[in-house]
Amino acid sequence: MAPRGCWLPFESPPEYLVGMRLLVVEDNDKLRASLKKGLEQEGCAVDLAPDCAEAQVLIETVGDGYDAVLLDRMLPDGDGKALCSSLRRRGSRIPVLMLTARDGVKERVEGLDSGADDYLVKPFSFDELTARLRALIRRPRGPVQMVVSAGDVTLDPSTREVSVAGRTVSLTAKEFGFLELLMRQPGRVFTREQITRSLWDQEFDGSSNVVDVHVKNVRRKLAEAGAHDSIETLRGAGYRFKG
Image (cartoon, rainbow, N blue to C red; front, top):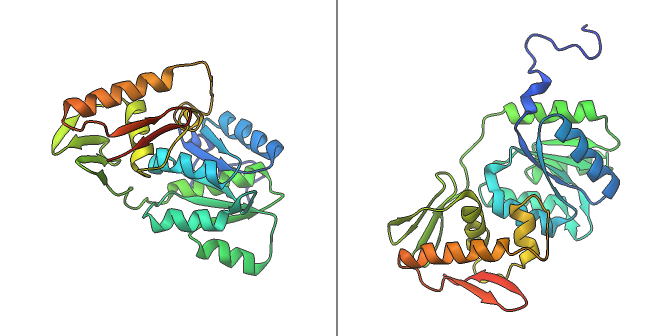
């Protein structure tokens, strides 16, 4: 048996996580911060969500751009199991590692049946967590999210292409992310803070006009392609996609 800490020839080295983008959904502030710090030291880019609502916004924005999701089972506004089931119903194949303090067989079965790829019981060692993540990320991925269409506007996450009635619209990465966020839930109002947290690693500066700039640019580009008034501003509330 190899000594603790040694890597056997058939195992992937720790560097396998370098460059991976992860979403950590955990309501415990201390654990959430600890996971972010540890995973960033492994070379990962880490987004955080304290509850189902924030996780939903991030997943709808980044989608299969995430290499894996660490999902707490019990969250303040719902069960992580329901969030995982919703993810699978939309056809996403993002690997999900469910974290929970519940260690009963029934709970494990429920977590896996909801679409989770693996199940880790708290408290756990960070070494085991990263080993489980490496195993999940090594697995082949299924199809990416489906094409989103609203009105004459079509958005394809797999190719990062946007078109209006067949006419291609060239968007930057942040502009694409903003449009995808709105188009996945047409009619829903997204606040400036929600948009900023989704697209700029959750660093929100209320005095910044960065969201306004991107809204203006996306509106102009869609209008030039023939889609006028697709994005509506609700004064004091936020933005929504009308289609």
